[in-house]
Image 1 (cartoon, rainbow, N blue to C red):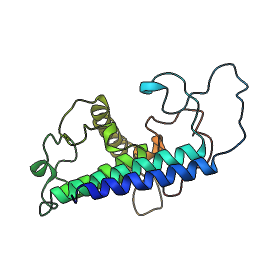
Image 2: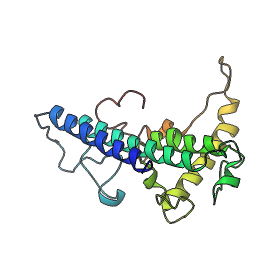
Image 3: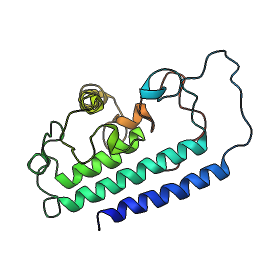
Image 4: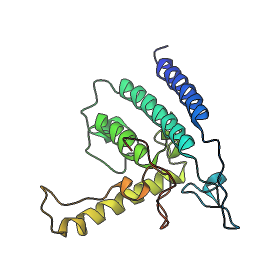
Length: 198
């Protein structure tokens, strides 16, 4: 029963957020002067092709729903590993290929607050929910490759930049993704401001 409580809270908060977004949605429509549709960072169905960009309200709803889903899953996983949070992730979870040696509890928070928030997605974007060790989704392998890329950039390039701060500058997922499932295009971010905290 206690496992259902976070899910119920996530559903209830999602409904409230959706109602708010519908009530505050802009009433005017904008037209695209170009004959081709504008491509969003997500692409069309299945991540392919052009798609009309999300309105600010729709983006806030998406981000809030995904955050609620991530928080609910993270809380459930943390409860399931209670007492083992400080053990290395690879001794608590199966199929750990990156972040070996990181405490299991910290790994869950890195996935939630680092990867998930930076891409604006919920856990199911890369994982099969409840079967976290499976490699059935290509996005999971892509995330591993991009993590290696970020490590290389930080180690081989960013660490050599002169700076007057306490440590070298770093890049991370958010540097390019800016809260979107696909890295930002050269045209920049989707229209409108990002929600606070993103």
